[in-house]
Every structure is written in structure tokens, then in C-alpha cells.
Length: 68
Image (cartoon, one colour):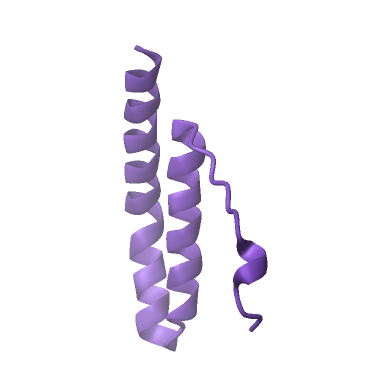
């Protein structure tokens, strides 16, 4: 039951975020050519969905990745 509530809350939160943030974000990207900020907005939306649904991300083996 708790999982269903978390899922529903995540769906609602991300949907509202997309409806509010996407139109101004796309407009700014089209007018000024700032496409990089769309990735920032998208990444925040993903983090919002993960946080609301209670999903944690753990990375192991990071020391094996090349720098840069």
C-alpha cells in the first residue's frame, strides 16, 4: 500500500513539475539558444521523481572511471 502511494505521489509530482517547468524552459532555449539548461531542468525532474518515490542511488566502482 505504501509503495502505491509513493508511486502515485511521484507521478503527480513529476507531472506537475513538467507542466510548470517545460514551457518556460523550451521558450528560453528557443529564444536564447541555451540548451544546456534543459538538461539541468530534466535532471532535477528525475531527482524529484526518485526522491518522492523513495529510491536511493548508490554508485560503486567510481574509482575505476577515468577522470575528465
